[in-house]
Length: 93
Image (cartoon, rainbow, N blue to C red; front, side, top):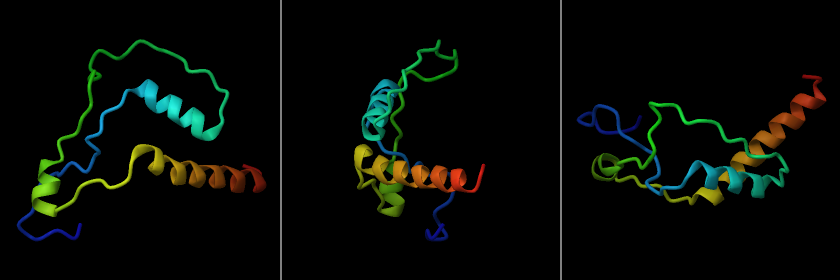
């Protein structure tokens, strides 16, 4: 949003660190202390088997690269949603 005028088009700001959805789910379960079971469903036909964003444009045009590891980024995200749920429960939602 604060890029130079000559920078146009979509720029991927994802994290090129690759992990499986199982790894993500297990990490979230561990960090939240959840005992919820992981449910495996058939993968949609058009779902990519690998996801690794190309952030070349972000590096070259914006000088940007991710600096926070997945596990460290999940901690404040989990805390945010935990707080949100607690506030909603207090308000009767």
